Length: 481
Image (spheres, rainbow, N blue to C red):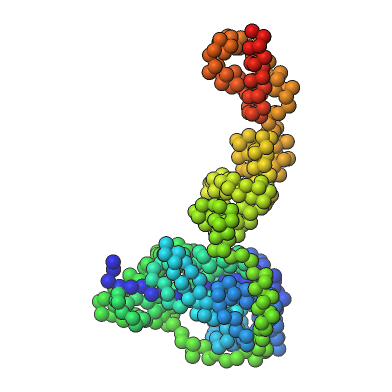
């Protein structure tokens, strides 16, 4: 046990998956050419008036409900005033005084359950993006991101380790993807995390001076940054120094944080009510409407898989950890009528394909009905298990249609009685010695004859049907003898 305690709170910025921006009709498509998606509203030109995107409000209420927040009935926007080159208006439209959600929580398991309190959740517009060119010592600005809708989720300082933070972010990301409000791709900036961290002597109640860390592009970076900053601060404090309240930038290559600027207080932003956007009145009817379309959340889904589908807790946890995996599992179980068999294929063969190819569940190409059809084809004896694995691989990599792939690659098992009888007859004729020994009581020769018959059909005979055909032929030979 260390002699100090790390205290962490998070500010999580989530880009919402809407087609247009929060206050104008410009598209939000990621990867567009620089400055392709900008108009007079998101450029902050004089006389341009913002208009709230209804979908943004719906997604904000949905997220607030999923995070067990109180939805603010009379919410409003405020101007956060500051100058930065990527902010053409000279202010950000955010929510300080009446955010859309307050006082929520999300639980994590490590392995004991712990409640992480959500202080608030608010809507705001994003800034542009600065592109630094080190070779020419120039900075370019792409304003296409200006006005992209954001939700900022602010937690209480309830974390005491990097493991707790990563567990929370993992669960939050899963939940946001399940309800469909964001794709949460950190590599594209649609999920960004700022870490507020302080240290104190173990047993102290008072919070220390905190720093804020930015430029965290992965959960690994978040974890590394917390470990580094905790050690840095405690070394200063234990040597009699004081912590500067500042914003720090995490350097992924050096695995160190560096000072960016002094940390601003809310008063320095000179917040005031946004005059161009009316107050948002959220009715009970509206909340009920959003609640009615809120999908089953991962924890509820996991519980149902255990209690209703009788899956082991480990399997249920893995299958419910991703929206795409859960949807594939449920569709597969529905088609094949066997949840455990569906789970076995996904937990074994499909997970191996994901790991071998480095594919995330959200990037899978496989059709939702393909695996269920493959399992039915195997269970009904139309294809072998090995052929089923081959077809699954083709479905995963190439979006192949199972039946068409089996046709094209001649993978169907032979079950025609006449073909199997002819194959058995030929084997018995070509293996007279083994047949004679079998009829004399050397019954282990049955497996040899069966193997020869399977070899003759190039492994494509239905094993059960072939065994029956051989047993019938041998019984007939016994009678003749």
